[in-house]
Length: 398
Image (tube, rainbow, N blue to C red; front, side):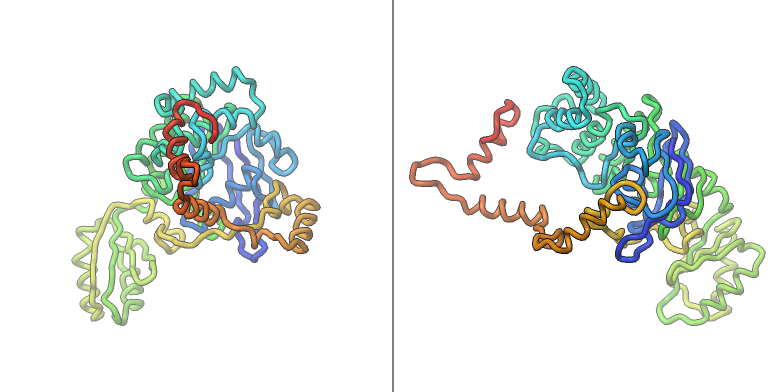
C-alpha cells in the first residue's frame, strides 16, 4: 500500500530531515514510526501526503506516485496532522460538511457519511455544538472523522494523541484499532509514546536523525534483547566509569552495554542474579553508585540499544517556507523557484506576517476592552456570548 525507496529530504537550513528512507507498508497494516521530536517522522508524513517536496527517491501511496500523481494520492488518503485541523467557530456537522465539499462529494453522500461517522465516533449528541465547546478527545475524533469523510484507503495519523490526557489517549486507541479491524484501513502513525506504538502497531520502525534503524514487530524487537536490563546511575564526579564499563563487558553474564549520557545500561540474562555481581565490580573499581535498577526489556530499551538515547528528545523538526512545501522532488521545481524569488522581493514576506496566535490575542484583548455604545446595545463580549449560546440553533453569524 505504501512503497518508499531511497527517499531523502534536506531543508534550506541544511538540516537533513530524511536520509535514504526505504520502507514497505502492506495493505491493512498499522505501522508506527517511533522516534523523538526532530527524528524525521513528520517530515516523512508530509512527503507521503504531498504536503512537502523531497530531493531524491521515490514514494508510492495506494498505487500512485507521490511525485507525478499527487492529486490521485490525495483522493486516496486521509491525513490527521499534529495540530487540529477543525474550525473552532463551526459546529462538528459544519466542519464535516465543509470537508465533504472540498472533496466534491454529492450532498446526499455527505449527509450519509456525516450520520455514519458521527455515530461511529460517538459524536451524534455534540454534532451541532460549536467545536470550541468540545474536549480535546472529542476534537481529535472529529479530526479523524473528517479525514475519513471521502472513504480513503490509507490514513496518516501524525502524533494522534499528542496533548491528550491518559483516559482520552486510551479511548482514541480503541477507535484506531476499530478503523483497522472493522474497516480494513491501512494506518501509518507517528508517535514518541512507547506504549502507543507497542499497543497499536503490527510493526514498528525506529527512526532517529532521519534514518530508520530497525523494523520489526514490537514483541520481536523486545525479545531480541533477551533477558533483563540493568541500569546504573553514578554519583557526580565519579571516575573510572569507562574502566568499569569495559570490565563488565568482558563478563559472561553481560551480553551488551550501552551508554545513555551518564547512565550505563547492561543487558544481562537475569537481572536479580546479576546485580550483586555488578555491585562487586563497582566496589572493586571504587565507583560510587547513585542508583541501580533492572527491568524487563521495553521499546525504550530497544530504542536505546539502536540509537544510544532514550526516547525523550526535545528537539523540534526543522521547518520550511510555504513555497518549499509543494509535492514532488525539489519541492515543486519551477513553481517553488518562482514563488521563492517573488517572496524575496516582496515587502510582505512570510517572515513579516503576523502569527495566528498573535492575531487571536489582539482580537481577544480588544474584545475585553469593548464597552457599551451610546445606543444602549450590548458590548462585543455580550454579543459573542449570545452567538455562542445560540450555536446549537444553527443561527447565522452576528
